[in-house]
Image (tube, rainbow, N blue to C red; front, side, top):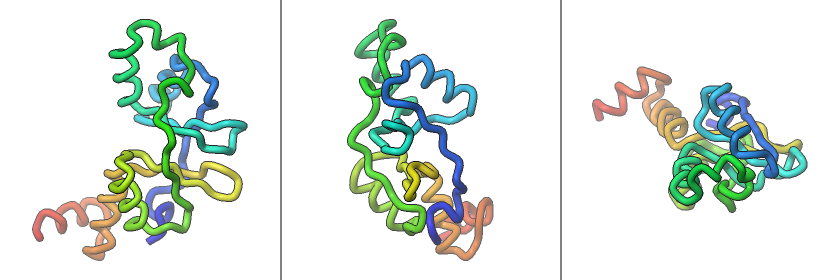
Length: 141
């Protein structure tokens, strides 16, 4: 199964020079845990997640909010293509140690997947089921 067939094409991006405060506001507004950081709106240069925010607090304290996304983002970050398989994307994430994988098409970022997304859809592929059925099938094996 292609990675975006299961996950969908929702992605929230933020410019690399955006303030960390804006990143936090965007994550809160969209109720998400990570943003794709871009340069010129199309080039993926990193990911900023709740993990980078937490580490930023430890390293920078209250000054974190005056920093830019590029100063705390995770980089370099691997990417995948919309037609890549869920298994291939999961292998990339395991190999690289990243929990968020931006999906990049010809016009730039077009999605983002997490380890949890890929495990959920990968189990569904293997069991011939989706969603809750996949989770149950995975626990019964």
